[in-house]
Length: 121
Image 1 (cartoon, rainbow, N blue to C red):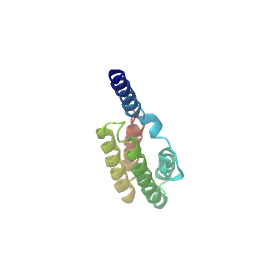
Image 2 (image 1 turned 45 degrees about the horizontal axis):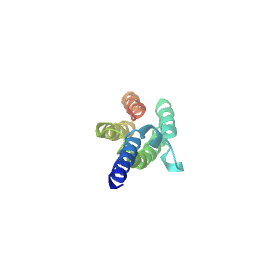
Image 3 (image 1 turned 120 degrees about the vertical axis):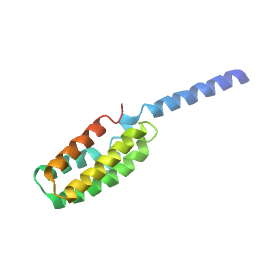
């Protein structure tokens, strides 16, 4: 009886760990108002294309706050390199927007989108 209980508990724990490790795609979705990264990325793209740098600075700050919430949820189910890549892309994009450099902002935006789309892989 004791042996069966140990095997059962071990299988349940392994199952839970596998679910956590494969839940990156689900956990990166928005659960609250302040963590909708995809909508903020679309807004940021519009700001860059229209060269609306003031709104772009506001949106990049909102994006940073949203990413801070999402990164805590997905930290166990994605690779650390991807998390750091998104952090660096946001910082680079923030600097490009602050410098009002449209070309660098577009490059930074595309890099950030690439990291975001490949987050759960």
